[in-house]
Length: 437
Image 1 (cartoon, rainbow, N blue to C red):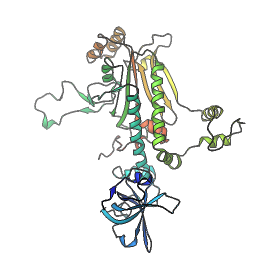
Image 2: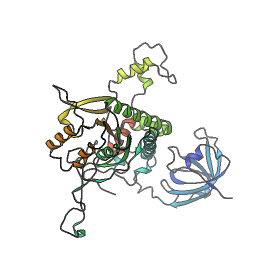
Image 3: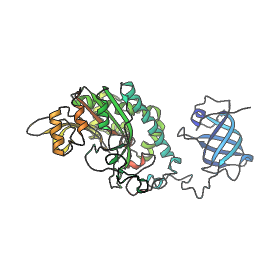
């Protein structure tokens, strides 16, 4: 009889109970007994593993923690209250051996994030990092869905560019190997080329034809830092909106994006998020804060009761550090594209940052300077009028008031999971003096 191949998450759902199934994955634990053999097997589709029960005669020396297996058997209801179903194995094949002595992760040890970080090629085998990657995948889906559902057009912006959008000079220059040059010109392109630090200027181009655009891709900063806050390569969500003259419009999109993505993650990855909140970055549960307070509430503060307005207000007051928008920064601190508020005596730009607890700046944005004369003067003062002539030309042909923002994806994950080190929320961390796979 041909066995149906299923994922561990599907097997755990119980839909295939009574069926002959096949699973492929990695052994998370091995418990041999006199007559029976118990395995926990996971394939990355869920935090929970599937328990496999087999006759002891199926046990072999190479069936160890960390090995890859291919198992067929019947999925049955379990008599153990810890799981609903278990796989009664008829055949176990070890596909890839794993020496548990040499394997850096041990079966009964809870390894710190600092220790796990030493093994970028193996850390996806740990519960914490596999949970992180599932959360990251669902958060990506949620962000894409938010923009699609709200009428944004996705733009694939270039990774190689001549623009230093942020103006900080922290750029990776792209050069051709000297032995491949065919002429004395050291540049492959007509001008020096760099890895992008922001897609904003390219999105502004597209905002001249589409009312709302976004991109979601890698960004690079050549910051010589190994701190917990810095990466050389990370992901940015950037959006640009045409026909807007208000920072309130930008702030609403930022807030709605944050809420939509977080609601989706909490809905689809509840167990994975709980792993971080309970074991890796534990914090106070809201209900515990309410119960320990001396405040007299009209409504109950027991677990299972819905939070009322009085509870929400108390929690905000208790925490004291909630997401907050900061607007209208000093004009000279902002790049050339930020719109001049033309206010006195405190000369400001129409810029906004969303600050969140534990991370700091999560989103940064501004209205863009659409007035040709003011933009020309600003570029001239910065010595950029020649290299940005094309940018000025955008203001000559059907220009409209517009604005946009960027959100650091890794910082978003840090915020919702409570992780302090940004290197723990990206599959392969790139930073100053790090080893590259």
